[in-house]
Structure formats: C-alpha cells, structure tokens
Length: 407
Ligand SMILES: Nc1nc2c(ncn2[C@@H]2O[C@H](COP(=O)(O)OP(=O)(O)O)[C@@H](O)[C@H]2O)c(=O)[nH]1
Ligand SMILES: *[C@@H]1O[C@H](CO)[C@@H](O)[C@H](O)[C@H]1NC(C)=O
Ligand SMILES: *[C@@H]1O[C@H](CO)[C@@H](O)[C@H](O)[C@H]1NC(C)=O
Ligand SMILES: [Mg+2]
Image (cartoon, rainbow, N blue to C red; front, side, top):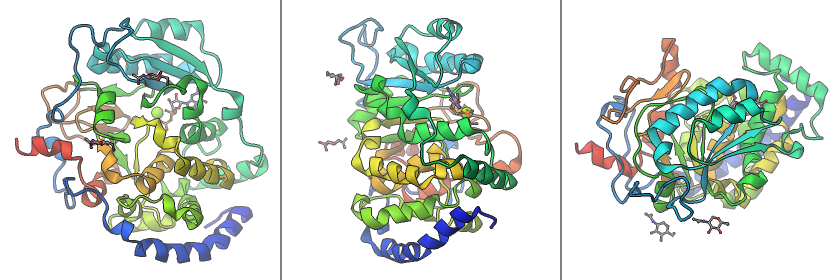
C-alpha cells in the first residue's frame, strides 16, 4: 500500500506490539461474553427486523400530561438534555427541513432546547428562521478557536501529501481540511463546549435528515431510566481506506490501558472477519462496523470519562484525524464497543430516520413517509454496507424489543 514514509514507519513500528496484543486481547475472558443474557440475538439476520411490528418500548415511559413539558414551565419534567447540531449558515434550508421533521414527530411535545454550534458566528437570517421552527429555547454557540483549529503537532505538508494518497483510494473529502476538523471536533471536543457544561444527554441532528415516526415518550428520560449510554438507528461498514491505522493505534492504547475494557464489551462486533474479510484485513483488524453518528442520542458522561478522554488524546496525538480521515463515527463506536457494557447501547428501532442514502424504517402505524424495512436508496451495492447483522449476532437487539416479537 502506498503510504507516506512517516505513516509507513509508524505502522511497521507498531506491528510487534500489535501481534502481541491481539493474542492478549483474544485470550481475555472479556471478549467471550459480548451482549447480555436478555439481549435478543439473531444469527445472520435472515430478514430485516424492521419488517416485524414495532411497538413502543415497555412502560414506564414519560409522556406529556397537562403542562409537564410546556416550553415555559420552569419545573417541567425535562432533564438536562439538548438537541444539538453543528451546522453552517449556508445549510439553513437543510437544517430547517431536519427541524421540521423532528419538531413534528417528537419535540413539539417535549420542547427540549436546541443548541446550534458553528465555527463562525450564525447570521441573523439563520437565527430568525430557526427560531420560527420551535417553541423551545434555542442557543447559538460559537466554537472556541482552541477546539476547532488544527493542532500544533499536525504538519501541513504531510497533511496534503496524505490527502493525495487518500484521494487515490477514493476517500471522500480527503483534501477538505474543514471536514477533518469537523470529525475531530465531533469525536473529542463538542462535549467540552462551555454551553454543554450542565447538559448530560444530547440528540445529534444534521441538516437534510428525515424523521418519519411519531415518538410519544421522552427519549432522554428513557436513556436515563434504562441506564442507556448510547442510542443509534443505523449500523454500517466504513471505508477501510479512511482508517488504515485507527485499529493499530487502538491496540497500542489498550497496551497500557487494558483495564478500561468492559467485561461485557462488543469486541466481536469490532473485529469480525467473517462477514467482510477483505474489509477487516484492509483496516488492519477492524471490521469497520460503526454506529452512523449523524444520529446519536447519548450520555456525555461517557465521553467525559477518563477512558474516553485518554483514548481520544492518544488518537489525536497519533494524527489520524488529518493524515488519514478518521471519522467521529468509528472513533465513537470503537470506544463504546471496548469500554462500555454492550447492553447499554440501544437500537432506536422505533425512530424512523434517513440520512442519504440509508434508512431506519420500522413497521408501525406511527410512521409515515418511508418504506417499511427499506435500508438504502440507490445503488444495490449499498445493501452490503449494513452491519446490523453482526450487531444482532454478537450483541443482540435491545431487550426492549422483545415485546414486539410476540406480536
Ligand atoms: N459549522 C460547520 N459545520 C460543519 C462544517 N463541516 C461540516 N459541518 C457539519 O458537520 C456535519 C457533517 O457534515 P456533512 O457535510 O453532513 O458530512 P457527511 O454527512 O459526512 O457528508 C453536518 O452537520 C454539517 O453541517 C464546517 O466547516 N463548519
Ligand atoms: C441540571 O444541572 C444543573 C446544574 O448541574 C442542576 O443544578 C440541576 O439540578 C439539573 N437538573 C436536573 C433536572 O437534573
Ligand atoms: C440502573 O442503574 C442503577 C444504578 O446502578 C440501578 O440501581 C438500577 O436498577 C438500574 N436500572 C435498570 C433499569 O437497569
Ligand atoms: Mg451529513
């Protein structure tokens, strides 16, 4: 593989450590017991589980009653949570579309605040138009320079050289410096913004996404009450060429931090080499399976833990946010898959969602505008990008969905 000399050296240098640790990790009892005894395991996913009827998760759920979620109620049932979105002024039409869908299906009932982030100030036009979409509070936050700027240890010449090579390998956005900055910020910086100091949970929203199904319970309370750390809708393979040394760096980190591994982790999902062997090989041991992070409902305490902080710091120093194109999705997913109890990761099966070109579309009378069970739109080769089969095989579907199975 044609890698820049510095990167090649780094890779060779870690080879020995890597092999040694692989043996160590696969021998550890922790990797034998992924998932929980109550999780619903499915082998090879013979049919899309979204074709089965989906109800709400079982009670107790927190619902609207009287004015308990009214926007101006100082003693509302809302917890410290926000919808958040990193967005550019130019993407105003796209974010209005996303807001319209999320407000219609969920937030007009619960009125959680929106927090918008930008690396440049929001325009008055942006503020005015977004304010008109919701009764809830909206905050417009500027990202501090020290969170957005390219770190001092990144060499610009090496960045450009590496981007040329990434481009040869068809890695999208290779030369777009701001895309690399965005991935780094979403990986390890966003939750450090002072505006989120008192916030614990967030729902991440991007411009131009769709929400299809009415959700009639407080999803943040659901996360809290059921001890969930992270919620996803779509689970995908990534381009191995965007993360050639992400797994090698992860193994290096684990060399001195193996105590951070959770006994009930999702290591098997992260390292499966049966379903797409060539992928795992190209990514040097990482299956590339990840939660698609344009949708996330999560507990920031996980990102704020010493395990994640130290892991991010290690990756940041290694330079792969710039010399490769590590996305926040694989970075978040690897950390969750290693350091968290896999049972605390929840598939929000009931939240109908689209970010082009993929869908989560459940079979429920609460959904309108998507085709039940459709996973992608466009070229048929997109079908193989679905990594849910491995998640259900190794970890299983959240026990909450057992109810709809008996239907
Ligand atoms: N403010 C700001 N937002 C950005 C920038 N780059 C990307 N984003 C946001 O980051 C998210 C991901 O970017 P997007 O272009 O949708 O990437 P894709 O979904 O991977 O194709 C979106 O919410 C964008 O609005 C940037 O330079 N500045
Ligand atoms: C939210 O956070 C603030 C500040 O930490 C705290 O005082 C408040 O009690 C929290 N509210 C809820 C509902 O947990
Ligand atoms: C959540 O965790 C708390 C504290 O560890 C525990 O007391 C509670 O029973 C757990 N609840 C659920 C639904 O697992
Ligand atoms: Mg996007």
